[in-house]
Length: 451
Image (cartoon, rainbow, N blue to C red; front, side, top):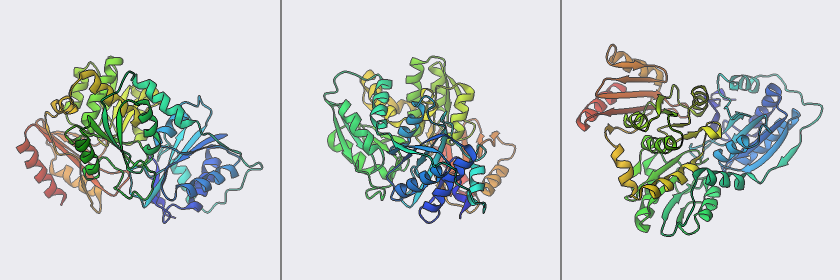
């Protein structure tokens, strides 16, 4: 058994090589033994091993006397909504998914009844140790029950529509939507029906865990080619793309140009502050400076995220009372959903923003492109922490330094951040400067250091 599948805030690995039904069953037993939940909700995505992992997990839970509610195929936002809207009916939830990872992977996200994730340092360590240990986990005297709940999709779609405040006639609207053969293939038809007078052009809405068309990851611009072509061919107002489990969302404008995730954060923050003036907004430290500047200009309190990853962000949102948080990686979190992502709501908010301003999307977002940002660059290295330490030593005594989550140094006219991915064997670099020349010069400098 490979203990590295237990990540900072979820379980993730090659499946079935590293995560198979036998391990999933033992994870279920460990959850039941340690947390002793009475009622657990379980959902899964469309990956090829998800159903077998789900079945084994459920049997492991039931062996410990846990009653299981199975919601079946769902996106991660749907799963989070199931917990949020349950009014405390569940003690815990497990979502079987590897999110945006390639088809060879699968995993699990664990959350308590208040939607706070279970990660390393908050309970996943104990589950890992019990799963990997030799100690047998005896069954409970009475096996738990299992029931089905097929109502989540409709309730979720209605709730997101109501939260968006959209109404009226959508005649003339043309939108391209790429679900990447992932879980938004079941949510988008619901919103297509609600936008009934508009035209929503589907790309890859069929669920297929082999991802036959492209990797379901809107962060990678190469995955957006089909969407960009559809936007231009159909003369759409914009295009939207989702990742495999539906907790990331990316956009391209009417010209087919991809909108950076940090600028979407700024757009959404402005809209939220119009409804909740003076609120705290959490932003990703890898974001352009325009993000905190826009938040402050809109009357909000801009606070940098201390640590990335959904478990850390949800915790910080509660500690600060933040109304919203956004990551460069295209995760967006809302307070009214216990700090969880809602990509379908983000999609609807984009429609509302364009409709309100009566402008092309390019004219709405491009004024935010004030500085020169490198975008996130990924490096495959043997020891990410060693590289981060070496780079930090190279700039010792220069600029304002933060080691909270990786390394970030601000030099006044430019800054960079360097951090190890929690989900992939990568080192991530982001850099921004006031001029393109300065950005490229320092980018070359850092690439040389990283090697």
